[in-house]
Length: 241
Ligand SMILES: Nc1ncnc2c1ncn2[C@@H]1O[C@H](COP(=O)(O)OP(=O)(O)O)[C@@H](O)[C@H]1O
Ligand SMILES: [Mg+2]
Image (tube, rainbow, N blue to C red; front, side):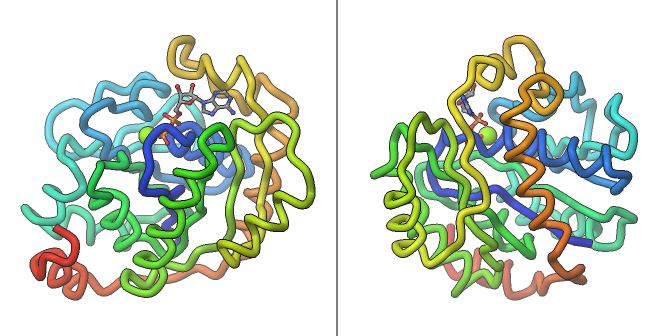
């Protein structure tokens, strides 16, 4: 199993949409995929897949083969604080990939906890707000990699128009990561929520970039359970609170 998060301590960069479409791409390849929607505020993932979440914590099938969704009606902070087993159980489930989608709160804590349970993360930059995106990315990288033992595998630039090779090289140097994909601003992607669209099926350019990310994910090693005790201790210690 590989537990993966599109991460950045900044809202609106495209994490949820990229999560949904990457999961769809992998499910189409026959991989068993679980999406964890812990964005209690907007439930964007559940919305795209037409899942209402129901009561409690349960796994539901989407209408795409091999793709299920776990809609936790709690923030990931609450889920971990209240009952660590809800999250811990994920590692014993029979999935090839698990994607955790959490909101980016102003403190960043939801992002950091998602990283605490993830094996790998992908930095998700919004090119239209590059400065704040880079700041959020640096915070996320420092804490995710050095403190929460999640491995950054690269960065994605989302909502780009024209972007020069030099800029990509500079961002790569700043973050010390490789570029996985460059995703253009697109009306089809923009209307994902209002029209319940999976852009992977509708936008060729978008599909191409998602497939590049999927190729990288397929090269990663499967991993086992992460040490939860240390995550809870970190939560309690107040460094992340
Ligand atoms: N490539 C894109 N082109 C145009 N709009 C986009 C693109 N990616 C995301 N958006 C828009 O940006 C907003 C935030 O996307 P979302 O995936 O919800 O971000 P996050 O989960 O990081 O908060 C959405 O309203 C979406 O329509
Ligand atoms: Mg989101």
